[in-house]
Amino acid sequence: MNNFDLYNPVNYVFGKGQIAKLSDLTPKNTKILFAYGGGSIFKNGVYQQVKAALENYEIVEFGGIEPNPKYETLMKAVEVIRSEKIEFILAVGGGSVIDGVKFISAAVNYEGDAADILRKKILFKEGANVIPFGTVLTLPATGSEMNSGAVVTINATQEKLTLGGSALFPKFSIVDPTVIVSLPKRQLQNGVVDAFTHVMEQYLTYPHDALLQDRFSESILQTLIEIGPEVVENPSDYKLASNFVWSATMALNGLIQKGVPSDWATHMIGHELTALYEIDHARTLAIIAPSLYRVMFETKKDKLAQYGKRVWNLTGSTEEVAEKAIEKTVEFFHTMGMKTKLSENADNYEKTADFIVNRFEERGWKALGEKQNITLEKVKEIVEMSY
Ligand code: NZQ
Ligand code: ZN
Image: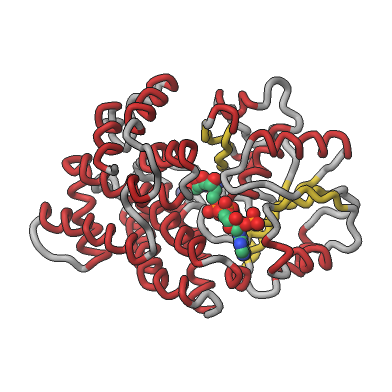
């Protein structure tokens, strides 16, 4: 097992009715920016619950953070915080609102061009001068409620880039599984597939000595396979909803990646598809992951076989089980409503592989994956296989 530091300071508050605890969790005598997305919170009662819990607070509202949050929108919130002298941010929404707030938190006191936070991948370590924030999660998928990473799109150049660092963990996150009832089926499907792929990125590498982490990962995958198809049909079933939400958090709160190799190439390539075609994040992963497993078969076949045996109960030789495991994964994505080819999700896609390869080359991303052997040639092959 590799050495690791496990640091996660998020006060994670889970369960029915927990939004009422906001008044205990939010610092007193503090002016707050209440940040949200396109307005779903007005229709499902979350806005009203937040306002009721914070009735004695001075609040400035900032709505309109879009899915795949845009740098240009977020900079408007940065201006509001500076001019209104706001000291705490409350993010109420899915991964996009929470990620957007992480960027806002980092950008307010950043000296220099805030786009550099993304382009130069500035790391915000503990002690950095950021604005503290808490979250109320409304969409289980990204794990953003319990991690310190974020993804932001610069609209002007169609670049989807990451930021993060230990200063960007939420102070608290309130996660009430009943809020998923109002989610459209498409977003529920996305949530399951995003969480599933987060586990795969940290698990599907090569056999190693971190036995417990493998078992953690396999149990999250099994839980998502068990509840995923049902929860999208019946999100008001609390047993299904609560297990879904907790699985999505556990998939990307840092725990399962400790001491193990990880990949993340599916995400890096997938982000480009969202930047180019506005395909939902999870759907880009369902397009790229199967091709990546096939192109990188030699590197990944032993772990694919472990996954096939333990998660899908498959039998046969290493190669056979590994092959069948990829097919099972694709079937699962289809069950979850994914269309796993780029041609089913975008028009005029024929030059996508060349475009992505050029971009990666410009950024110096020439070796991705757990063994750094996903070269630009492999990226091209993976994307072309996904057409
Ligand atoms: O904007 P509103 O009106 O709130 O509507 C949203 C949005 O249209 C809606 N929604 C959210 N909660 C709802 C709801 N509708 C009804 N009822 C509710 N309870 O759902 C739509 C999608 O929301 P969004 O926040 O965009 O979805 P998601 O949580 O999947 O976040 C996706 C973003 O997170 C990034 C992705 O790249 C993408 O930009 N990621 C962040 C990660 C992280 N921070 O660790 C890791 C992930 O891999 C991912 O890259
Ligand atoms: Zn993801």
